[in-house]
Length: 213
Length: 245
Image (cartoon, rainbow over all chains, first blue to last red; front, side, top):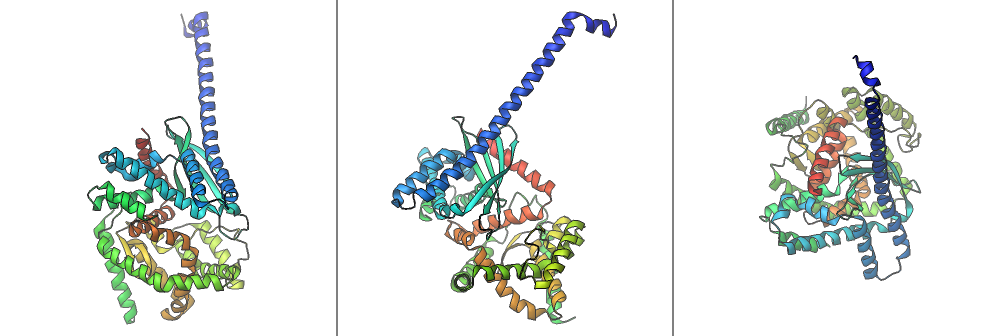
């Protein structure tokens, strides 16, 4: 029996066709899942910025404490503080106690809030545009965007957001690179240097972070 | 050859030697800072200088000079630096950048660079001798904090000296004249432009480390080839995935 006759036997042909269709469906399904993930990740970044913009204009006359509280909830929704805390302390994270971990996370959150509060009022005159979204490895998604000044006075700024699913399967931001300067990398350099000089003492790091409010 | 040239050559040779001794221990990931304690002292000297002199002047520069005039000054300073980009693009065999920069330099020469006649349409990639050295695989070398000039790698600092010499030779026969006027204006203008970033660095828990990190990340991304930058991104991705587990 030659190869053609073998293929022509009905059951072999049906199996091949079935396998081909199955593969096609599987490919389409995974492509759709990936595209859906990319869209959701892109939406996360755009929603954060639009909500921050609304927040900047609507809460300008509010009490600063209430304003800070609102920013805090915004950050907790869109930024993965847990990841940031682990990534910025590197190998020292495992050596910290649960209490130290919690204190460090809240100190980090306060630092982010302070940074955002300083720059919040500038947001109203800027526009953000997503340029490219790309999956990286199995978990990460890169979202490249650009911030432009409406008055064209300031030069445009390139941004790179790194987004991934959190434990609750929501997309959250892990890192932001502004003109190739990563917030995680620069914060990590600072914290690990402090920890190294103080023999891994987390309390000194937390105290220092709280002082730099 | 005058005394100044001898000092410059001696200085360059010492920098290359420091660079050579440092070797290239995968210098894109690790930070080579063997002179940290000395660098910290210089950093705090520069900071004091900034607090007392440069920052107050740059603030009054921002308050008293209209934004358009400041933009013109910035544009002129960039134009003055274009010949260096032309030379270094040629040395790096980047023909497109050489042609574009030359065209931009000639066009804006009509206004001495004070007004950008092509409305920033031509995107020129700034090149200095440090980037040329990087292109030819000269190692980055240790990190240096230079008095008055701020953060540099030894490679960039060697390049900076060569660039300054080229620049002065092209614009004026005398080294001192043009630098005496240009450098202070450049420092004040850059300080004003980067005021938010510099202030945020000074407010951090370890300003020296933050300054070093900002500088190195920015410098590496501009000097490295695309291939090297992609490799670095992959390394970062791997690290991120580890923390996501």
